[in-house]
Length: 237
Image 1: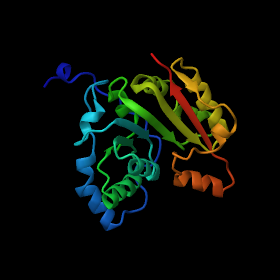
Image 2 (image 1 turned 30 degrees about the vertical axis):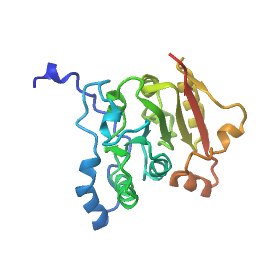
Image 3 (image 1 turned 45 degrees about the vertical axis):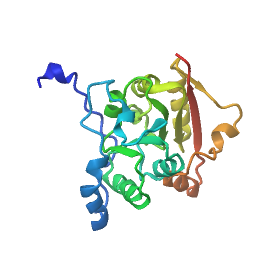
Image 4 (image 1 turned 45 degrees about the horizontal axis):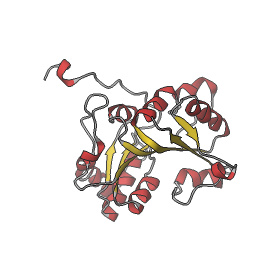
């Protein structure tokens, strides 16, 4: 197949953090070698041509996406609570991927598929209006001003979410950095496709019951930092 038949290549995303941490225990390393290949999405098709429901062996009522799932606590909890939903997760950190694959194996979660890389190529590959809910939880806030361009939420990502989310679907974003809250709000609300669902301060200060806690939230609270939970609705086209 020549380059024209394959379609445009996905641009290489910016590497935002570590690829590896401490050495994995043998059991988790074995899971990565035996189970991860069957869970991995790929190779990605040309932009806009990935129909996510086709990634699952059994029918699913909806497909949700989490970009930067960390150690996967939230993604695994959502998959347990919503067995008729297919879940896509993107994360480049090998140790976090290993933690989620361990949970998938332990709980027999057949409704999760993984992209073990940065999230931009997956976001770009997904077809329009194919995702019922998306999550970006406690991504690196890159607090220094000169590093703000590395933040995941920006024009390119917001454009991507506006394209892939179904009408009335939710984009959920969490952070424990106050300056990051302003950044997220300014970038998401600058796009005509999104409206902020908050009616009172409690709506963004208190985590909803169907939003499982992550270890990053627990770590922030232990350090005395509040967490913020922002929910945006995709307006009807």
